[in-house]
Image (cartoon, rainbow, N blue to C red; front, side, top):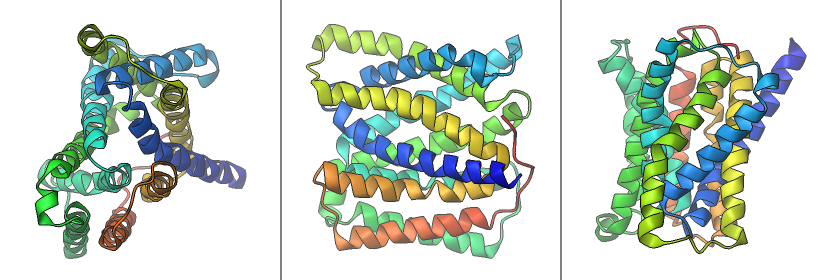
Length: 301
């Protein structure tokens, strides 16, 4: 049992590193591909790897109803989520995008309160307001005038992506009790590739072949194999042995990794007030996530 938990913690570390680097990889790939082309290629590659390794991953069988329910899930994530994320990363700093994605637990909490009627306490409200204050510092780091320029649109796309991911999180709870995570993630990747195929073909017909160099293609390979396949698989391993609250809190390492890589690899500059805002968001969201009561046991698979 101790070995299984140690393996799950190692999986969490690997997942955080892989997803953290995805923001930089997306920024690099978007220099040559449109968002639709990138998402199609990424999830086509991820789906292919999932199906190649299906005999060893032990995906649970899915009935006809399950196919339709997973399709609805896929509309939120990867569907809407990754398009909004790519549009946002095109318009804002990769490091800022990674921090703003960290608001997903806030959205989940609000959906639980207003949709699922879960009780909320005053301390949680305070942490939500504190997180929103950190987001304000991030968005307005360059001054109010610049915040209401192009960067505001990018930050808005990222926050909308976080909301789409939160809706997915709430809807996925029942499905994960019936089908294992491998089966769901594999179908999500396939659905995402099918969703974005016509948009990718349209971009290809209007823009011509992407002028992508080795750096951009390596970024696509990383996003497809490293994230759409491996990072999600490591996430599933950790969820099989650790409480969801621990996993959710640990994923706040992702923006730290993304910020460091954005500064090192992309030459992005962070204002001191952004560092303060980032710290406020990460700390408050981590505390918020860790104090949530666990509603069910960790799901296996």
